[in-house]
Length: 75
Image 1 (cartoon, rainbow, N blue to C red):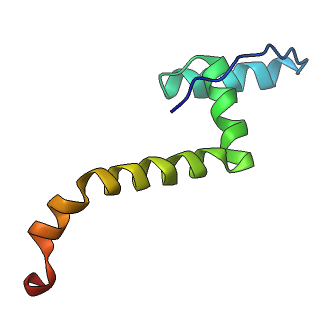
Image 2: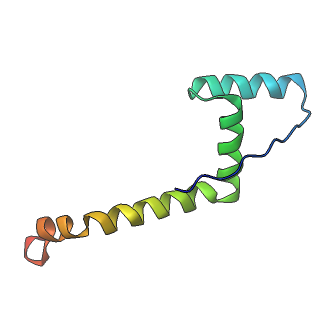
């Protein structure tokens, strides 16, 4: 996946939202920044698109292996 240029976004939210974001990020082993970034990507469908691209690349790379293992006669 290509690296993208990063930009900074400052937002103001109430203390309860900050606390919740920190707790959720910590529970997932993420920084708050990464947690928020993943939420936005998920909401915009980017995470799903990225997953599909990665799966397609994987299948392309291992297509021959699957064909040999699962070929027509092995159903």
